[in-house]
Structure formats: C-alpha cells, structure tokens
Length: 163
Figure 1 (cartoon, rainbow, N blue to C red):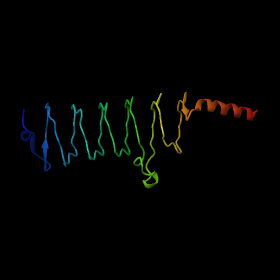
Figure 2: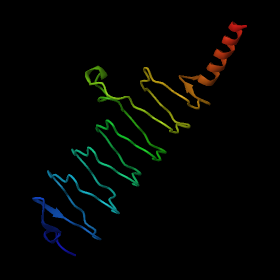
Figure 3: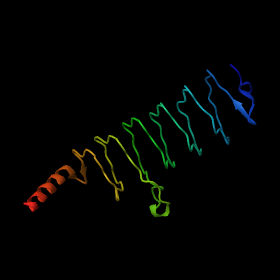
Figure 4: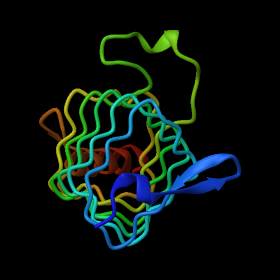
C-alpha cells in the first residue's frame, strides 16, 4: 500500500492533488481548502465535519441514516426525494433557539411540498401566518381540538345561517 507522499501527485493548477483509488484510509484534513473535491462510490461512514463551510455541497443517492447536524445554517437547503422516517428536528428557525427573530434579516419562508406527516408531532412550533393548502387533515388535532370536526361544525353552522 502506498504511503501518503506517494499519493500526493504533481500540482494541478498550482495546487497539490491527492488521488486515492481502491484504498482504505482514514484521512484527517485540518485548516485546508478542499474546494472542488469530489467523491464517487466511496464508503465514508462516521465522517466528522467541524467548523466547515460546506456551502453549495451536493449529495445524490446517499445514505444519511443516523446523521446528526447541530448549530448549522441550512438556509436555502433543498431536500428532494428523501425518506425521513424517525427524523427529529429541534430548534429550527431563522436564528438560534434563544435569539429573537426580529434581529435577523427576512429570509424566504420554509416550505414543505408533497410530504407525509402521518402520525407526526409538531410541538411548540410558530405557525404565525402559515398556510396549509390542499392538505389531507383527517385526524389532525391542534391543542386537543379535532380540526376535521371543527370544520364540520363550521359548515353546519354556515348551512343553518344560510337557511
């Protein structure tokens, strides 16, 4: 197996380039710029990123089971075609959990499209000016009130008023 010096190849565009192929190595990268790096068909379990800028990173066909993200800026995050059974989101918003929202610039609103929240729980969430469009609300309960039954009662009341 080659040592690290053998893996460092001649400079590409003024930068040293490392190429690993069919190798099993633990690599530690500290205070480095690996912008433009790519990984394909790689086993990379138990990676740890700390104080890293991963802006613009793209992942496709990846297994993130058990992944943990904390103290992260995920503005403009786009997740498409993912399975999220058992996922737990805490203290998600536009600022830290203790900071008032008014101190932070206005950002695009969070959007969920074609998602399943079946038997999910949303606790202590801010839904100020939130909109549910074309959603199946069967069994939806907010603070102990069945929304489905509330809509039925509202429809019956409107029917009585109209008669």
